[in-house]
Image 1 (tube, helix red, strand yellow):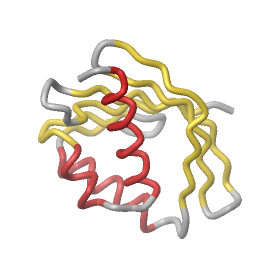
Image 2 (tube, one colour; image 1 turned 30 degrees about the vertical axis):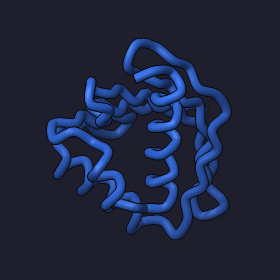
Image 3 (cartoon, rainbow, N blue to C red; image 1 turned 30 degrees about the horizontal axis):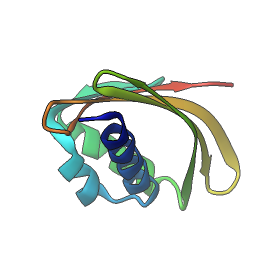
Amino acid sequence: MNAQDLIARTNEFLTAYQNKDLAAISEMVSEDVLLRDWNLEVRGKGALLFEFDKNFRSSNTIKIEVKNHYLSDLAVMAELQIVVDEQIVLAVVDRLSFDRSGLVSEIVSYKGL
């Protein structure tokens, strides 16, 4: 995958998250995907979808604005502003790593102040 493909796949994933589209997310992640953020760490597609579904059910709206992308081999770091329910503003950096087939194999999220 080239740099443009990686950025496009990252943006597709973030759009699916913003739209609370579990079916689309399921298609984009590997079976043994790792999710790690400031609250938890889970492995496996089922566990990831379960955690995302909890997040989706606990909010009415999610708006993601990508501020910057940073690339390395098969990974993209995206500097984000996430607004939940039009009032909770989060500064987040997500690192999405991809396997050779283009599926997300790892999501690591860092929350700023």
